[in-house]
Amino acid sequence: MDNIKKAAIVLLSLDKEQARSVLALLPLEEKERLTLELAKTDDVSQDEQSAAITEFRDAVENRTVI
Image 1: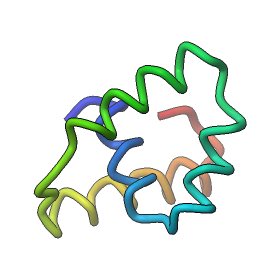
Image 2: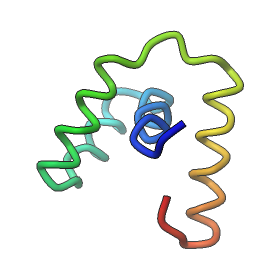
Image 3: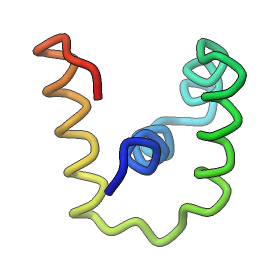
């Protein structure tokens, strides 16, 4: 799973207002890439969601880039 897909899954895990706030912080190019990925992401398994969220949480805790 690539990083843009993982980011889309994490955003889909948030409520709409939180996701909107995150998108607002991104540069235009990243926002466009992520919006396209969000539009084509459906049927995310619980395992995919858990893996994406866990990797995001670990990156935040370790202050690394994903």
